[in-house]
Image (cartoon, rainbow, N blue to C red; front, top):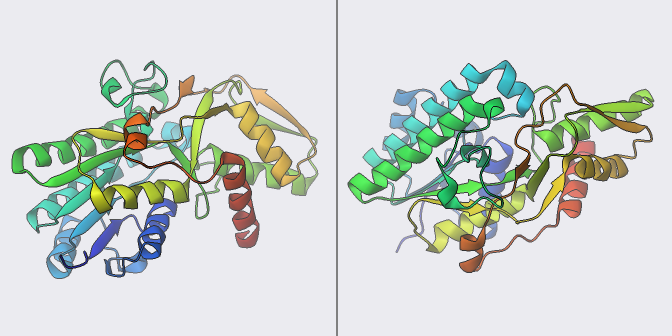
Length: 307
């Protein structure tokens, strides 16, 4: 069979860029819509025109706005609207213009707040979602269900994966918008530069999270696209969690911040624990390659080069 032409929706973001690199490193050479050539995914006409002209064979969906608790509290309408538009347009066009295979990357936010840990794929819809990211989670669930419905109704090879919290080069390091690793790294570097004697961190520090280096998520995406098809969501994670306080201490050591870490308990923790059960993916033969500490060091090195 002819080598596929690949479209990575969201190729301008950290995960999308990592996925393009992972495909290239695995010998795939035919891409469409990379970087500035990607259409405005919020515009259905632009997306349709792109698919009609380029006819991508494989589509990996890694698009849509995302951020930490701060952004979710401040701009829930922006998050839900952007993610609904992008997912609807890309998935619909991929089906209409004959994409052979698609991978929709959802978010671990789709799982219930009180799901049993580690979270299995069958925990979906078992109980209410975490309120602090409800709008975003609902939009990712809508894309997930559209992908599942297209597969069910039309028999297309459209698949769903749920990556855990990822981080790495290319991340958003704006403390007001970014996820916890990017936000903490940027704030610790700023505090060090200003000679601050302490840094306040949102929440109690007790919440536990699983983190995966972005290259490992990209590697899993290539692994799945290259030889697998499955029903329903499939988790991508490491199965190992650390508390936010432990993460903060690791980042403090890496950045060299010499002050004290304090915790603002008036701010929310989000889900108390969030770790994915990735046994199904592991049984297929995939495992992450980059340990958390090494991934944090690589990300810090990249951050220093850029900032």
